[in-house]
Amino acid sequence: MIKVYGMAVSGNCWKAAQILGLTGHAFEWIETDTTRGDTATPAFLALNAQGEVPVVVLEDGAVLTQSNAILAHFAEATPWLPPAGLLRTRVLQWLFWEQYSHEPYIAVARNLITYRNQRVSQAERLAVCATRGNKALDIMEQRLCGHDFLVDGGPTIADLALYAYTHVAHEGDFDLARVPGVAGWVMRVASLPGIHGLRS
Image (cartoon, rainbow, N blue to C red; front, side):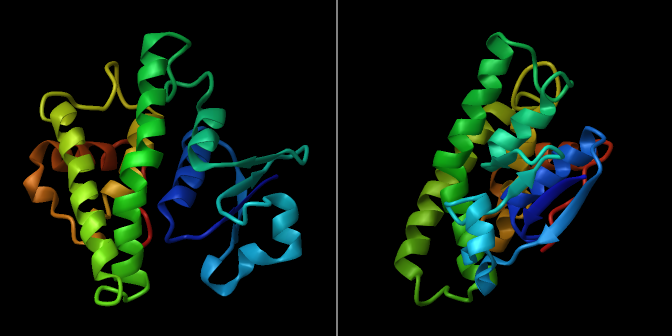
């Protein structure tokens, strides 16, 4: 059976479990807590030298890392990933952007405020996260104020990638009421069959 090493409160790990469920793959979840040093053990580092979750181990022993690459792998030949062409390129654009311009600010703010209780000690870093995270939400708003999903043609893994941390953005002090197009999209994604929210 497929094995997933992940942390239940992580949006990146949520992506792996979500796409496996949506595409009908049974898997074993192995809770791997980065705060306890679970990703620093020799056994884990043998799977992923970067010491990061999620890690997916396929039935044949092949190891997959990087949450958006995992999304793309299991979405292949399903409605969640368009065939090669412009629509797929649009999906990839959003995947790359999410990891560079969205997750580093919205997810980091959530972690520092909700899980590390460092609102005061990390005030300067959180100010940067607030500015850049809100800019990311504004970019999403430009698209979503006039479209149901991030890419034409229906929901894709681009929506899963961005939903992962956007739907819990309030835990990083982001106000989705400020971006009604994004807020409406969050509700649409949440209502799709098979979608479950991230454990907070």
